[in-house]
Image 1: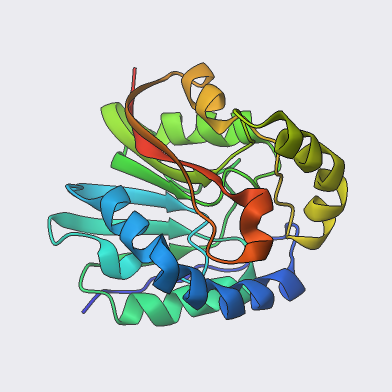
Image 2: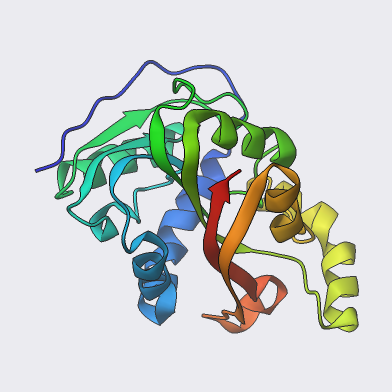
Length: 220
């Protein structure tokens, strides 16, 4: 079974209410298709992988056996505890670390791949988080991403996202509706080699976060 290595808690922003809400609604999204998205996201990975914003560890069971270690970074204590439980059931080794995407507790060029799964919407500084991911990846290392993004092809819903975003960010653990994450990945020094753009709406209320991207990029 997978190994677990927790580290001491560091001070940073916490969202305890949203963390509990997320663990309540996540199983429904997984059954509606998110689990299959995670399977595609992680397919073919090997070596040492850093996962940023691991949450309750929903990705862990999808890692292929070729992965030698997952270094999972999660700042929220409640979610980190759930990740420890998930890591104990994982078939691959998982080390759980406390930390933020903007300051990863991982050595430079020490990872073969990096995984971002529904987290670049909520990091405090997206550009800095992507720069950190580039730092910890070896040259030619791969970034796998699965994120909800701003509407790019529906002006009416894009406008609604902009209107709702300030309140949404406060209620949803710092999550933003209007980020152009695809462009941010490219600007951070990655070359996107594969990308899917689709809408995922597991419930009627999810229309506001329906646009998603899933893909791969390499550290240039």
